[in-house]
Image (cartoon, rainbow, N blue to C red; front, side, top):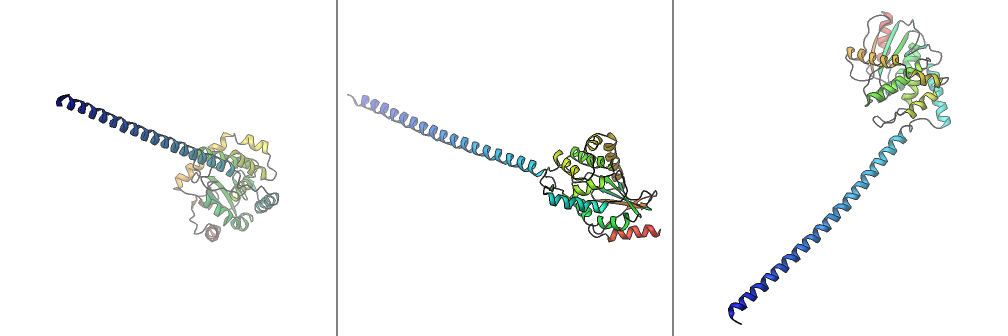
Length: 275
């Protein structure tokens, strides 16, 4: 065999070795890619499972939390209802208004049932204002709706109409008080039909059939819109907000220094009564 032939054979052998090396490298690369794709797939499955688990937990929490604040214990519910009833008992009510229709002073209270600061006022200074001024016939309070804390407009409308519907039986203030006492965490989605039904069932003497029917009254929805317009005209963008004045006359803003101490309300009322 000539040296030329030997060189050619060697070259072919080198090419075969090179090709074999390249194929092995490709096979290793493919194997690595397959392993990587498998890991990514497994990771994707894990992430998907985690996401599903989180969604399930959120749904369970939301549905469970819808009535979590309601007083389920018989003794607890009885005490709460008794306390609320004693606060407003024997005080005239007319729709959204509590107090003597001929009271010389009118306090307008703009609120959102899901507003935690409204809860502070309703459980703080308000009972003292009711005891000192409303029960004695000197002040009447009008509750007016202003959406601030409730994130979904339809939920806001539904819950406020539910309260106004109780007002058709002159029991709106029992509904309001019971709602605020059992208010859930803001933006947690706790206000469901079950929650509203639970509040209504706690209102002593409320005819639930009539209450359900009255919730469809378009006049009540229109009242919420009117309240919102009045709040805008007054420059209110937060709740609770207050207007106060002599009944039948112009009303002015009441800037309360505290929502748990009635001093600011007492001062404004006394000033108007001295007139």
